[in-house]
Image 1: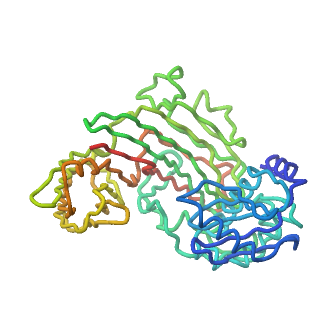
Image 2 (image 1 turned 180 degrees about the horizontal axis):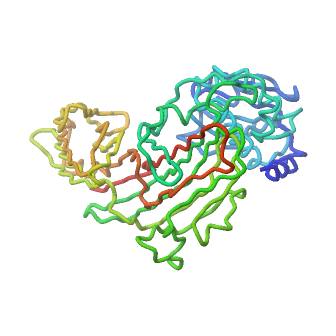
Length: 457
């Protein structure tokens, strides 16, 4: 980590930052820090006018206006912006902004507009320590926590992942204790704080699933991107050892033969991870520091060891007059004891659709027509494994013709799968050394969420 910081400082040694500011999605000014006094304060309004004219969601963007360069990223619905008059490396500035976001998340537990508003004093203090007269000094949590005096103000965050299914790992086996719902989003307290959260460590196995299923039900594409993340609240820990499946293999040539193989195509590790026991025993070793780190990233392409979690059986036909009938039968192919949550099914409908009537298989489901997006959205809060749900939508479409039926589909889905990994990756143990003087808690959770799940009809 120290090497990374030194390299970052060297790269930007001749590239000065003029301003750093954070804007809400509506252009509200949340944070503004001017390091050199060489740019007018109305640069924030100039930036927002320029970024508002961009079409759709944009990746990190570099824009220029009268000799002033704006480099920004979007995170949590906010604009994180650096302005500079020099020809700075966009990649370096984007990396700086990403580390600023990560630091605020580590200190405050979550990143959103409310968090930024409640912790403006802390963020200004962070910027003061991170940047001096436009030059980056450090982005290390270990260094910054020795200087930051402002306590974070925690707010209950919106979490994509529900922690109600998090389990506690003991020395060898998983136990049934459940973590509190906001445990993993607890802020990192400064070193002088006497409050809780000092003897816990969270290990997340997170996978993102991308699937395309043809109209005949054949899987045309199935990709998984995953990572193992650690968030540490331990005051001291010389080493942590994490064991993954012994039959874990990278590429088809490394199949190990101990049992049902857990295979990925590519795998990369954080530079601080020691791999001397990985080839023989599939053990990752690291000396964790306070904050969040991604230890391992992996990818599996065009192959799933189990069937996709959802199958759709659609029927689309023209009813009398200008009514379109859409009948959907959706099956969840997860194991019976598993379930999907926050399931959303989006069905494109013909342009000009006016109204919707519906028949749903259970009262906790909802559906609505969104004319602006030309779609019907079917929401399912919880979908048990092995279950099958159905819906009938009757859509009024003036001037409905046979050609209009071609505008229906493809169907897209979003969902979360707690306690589930599509690759089958599991953690055998999480061990800390030396033994902590105070009891330490190790929380491990698995979750898969949909990156892109498309079904053609």
